[in-house]
Image (cartoon, rainbow, N blue to C red; front, side, top):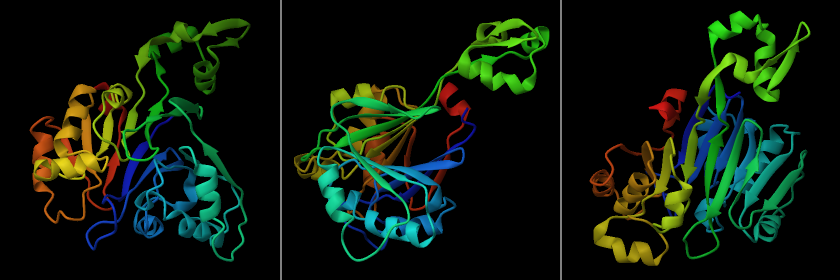
Amino acid sequence: MISSIRVYFLGTGGSWPTPQRNTLSIGIRINDEAILFDCGESTQTSLMKSSLSLMKIKRIFITHFHGDHFLGLPGLIQTMSFYGRTDPLEIYGPVGASTVLGNLLSIGYYSLNFEIRIEELRGNSSLDFGDYSIAYAKANHTIPALSYSLIERDYAKLEEAKIQEQKVPRNLLEKIRREGAVKVNGKTIRLEDISAGVRKGRKISYSGDTRKDESLTNFFRNSTILIHESTGEKSNENKVISYGHSTGKDAGIQARDSNTKRLVLVHFSPRYIDIGPIVEEARSIFPNVTAADELMEMEVSINDQQA
């Protein structure tokens, strides 16, 4: 059962690093393990400045192979090795991941103390990791690209009065959640005997680079938090869309139409020192908008999903 989900904005800019923003990387800590969505340049430096340990990262999900989304991988992986990592590292990405990442990670002379497992993701599907799954869907970009959603498993709400009535030992409650039933003193206690309704799991979605797309609106449906790219605003709309990106307005529409609870904007073009116009454009469509700052952290509580 997941007790804590925390999001780390390790890089929030697009295209290339600037003095104000690193390129994209979003960390998510789930209890005591972590994943990354994308790994732009300087991700390892941002991790060292954050409260998220790079040694906790178990899986990395790359949206596509434009440099600002994956060129931080060699440095991060070498540093993990220098720190003595022995646990395997899983890396997932769109078609071409095996070739691109295989070539990238063979650069230079260094040795690793751990295994790297690379998996290419095709079509729209999901991967089950027990307490949560990672869904992925085709994004609308200029090259093969994916959007991702971390989806916490739904849990039955346990009712204290029923637990006491059935005299269920506390150490068996999670086993009942997992298995649906256990025997207590020769009597079978089912999950429905001690529960009252379902607690919907939290959902954190990440667009990667994409134009606004109706299929992604469905993919992002009911997100607790939607982290969406917003490369520019209406004065640069034609260029933004032609390069396979979204405006602040587009991100707002995606959040509104997908019944998202909170929208966080990332991937601001380096041309913008002041991102105010992008944020206001999104907010004119969808009021609950936050512009991500470098190294911003965000706790995602159970109540955020129920609200």
